[in-house]
Length: 191
Image (cartoon, rainbow, N blue to C red; front, side, top):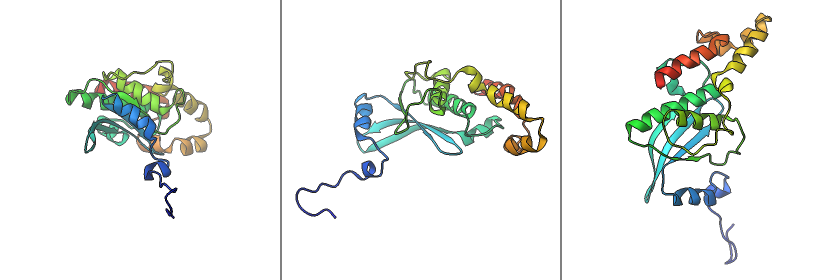
C-alpha cells in the first residue's frame, strides 16, 4: 500500500469525499461561527458550529423532526420544513446569544432555490445574521408550499392517486391543499 518514500497517503476524509479542506480552511480563517446545513432523504439538520483548537463545538442545532413539537404535520424533507428548521435554529441561537454566522454548505452543489437556501432563508428571517443573497433563495410561494397545494388540488380528481401521493399528509390529518395555511400557523408559533 504505502511503500516507498514517494508515496504519500492523503487525508482519510478527503479520500472518502467527505471534506474539502481548502474550503474548510477559508471558513475557519474567518473566525466566525458557521451555519452548517446538511440534508438526508427524510430530514434536514442545521447546526451553528464554532471552532476550538481541540475540535469543532456545536453551539446550537435544529432538526426537522423537532418541528412536530411545534405542531408541524407536513413532511420533513420539503422546502417548507427546511425554512421552518432555519427559523427554529435562529430561535435557539438567540437563546444562546449567537447573532451572526456564515453559511457552510459542505460538498453540496450551490443550486438556486434548493432546500439548503430555504433553510438559510429561514435562519435569516428568524433573526440570525447570515450573508445570503435573496435572489438565490426560493420564492415565498414555494416556501409556503403553494405548489404542493396546487398539485394536490389537481390530483384530487383521481382519488386512488391522491391517496397514494399524499398518504403521509393524510395520515397526519393534514389535507395537502391546506399546507400554506398550516405553514403560516407554525411559522407564527416559531417567530
